[in-house]
Image 1: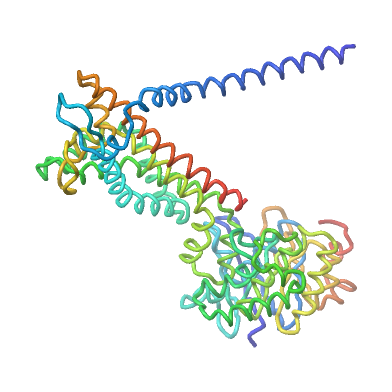
Image 2 (image 1 turned 120 degrees about the horizontal axis):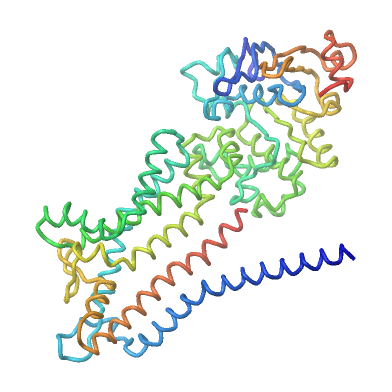
Length: 284
Length: 258
């Protein structure tokens, strides 16, 4: 009798806990679904081939597109990847594989602080460092600020993925007389490769949508990119410019731009998770 | 002789903690030498000092001499990877490389130290798998991942991998403690075959195993908690297990402690 009661109260508590967890999970999904749905709803109307391939038209003329901003965003992400990925990945390798306690502690702390610095501050920093000294806004300056922004994420995810590789594999390789560097490159990094690639893709997806650090580094442009030392358009800045302008057809274009940006980010993050996630599972 | 190891007053520590102290022993070529002793007596640490694996643990240090092939492997001009190619190791838990096929696992030590010759690699893979008594079970699935094998097969794969780099000596750190009796039997049979061409040093918890497989036995013991482990007695296995010189050895092998 008493046992029966106890069992029932346990069951009820378990049910409540389960319900609260499920509810929270659904609540967390609602904003994502709403944002996606709304962006598709608003953006799909103005999205067409012209939008993807044409330059913006002057005020008053209809049509035109954000082709230059899409290309500009790809250039900026490319610069950031070329500058930021090698440094970030190698820093992660250092943190995980060469355990010098004091330097590692310092680097890890700085990386964590850097990842907490608001992106606009990084923009201001690069503005002072590059834009003022070179006396021009440039794609290069924009790329550098995005590279700085992705650096801590890439370094820390690389470190974490490498730490997930069991020490028994490092020992197995070293015991075969394989040198340390070769063990790290061919065994440890390769084993963690899928996870590291996922981290890189997520970092790229994150910087693809950054606006603030580009406002006073890459600035904006209404023409096709002509050089890394020239200002360049980018999707987030173009969306921002169009969204705050007083013209209805610019607003529509801003929505279409948002849709393209969201799709780019989704492609990067979901795609990499599906592809590399499968690879990682085979390791375990 | 390339297959023998002499240690001279060998001590090892982790930071300030001394794990083993003053071990002087001559391990003979083409024999199976077992190292036995209760948990925490430093048997594994001692074994890992013999091919410079001990120093990989942060803060770990070894002092004294380990003479192999006429040279002290702790001399400053000696390169640790080169020592490990001559003195291979098999670990307690099978640890095949998860992303590599069976064949690539076996040839990893060759490929990753610069060997390119495909035919020679294939020949070594076959020879090593045969030596480890695994060839017949895997010859039709050499491209399958190493992790797809059973635990006992994985351990024999690890033995084949260690043999592929052609060491003189193989160190085995409780190689059967994660395996079932049938797999243990196979590994013990393999060791019997291997000792014709290799020297084997095996650390084991299992006294029956030491008695079954080894020609010589060393008994390590920590006399007081916090003290480093010391070599209490070393000699032919038949003597250690029937008429040991020390009371402590007798107590241990008759199961009175440990």
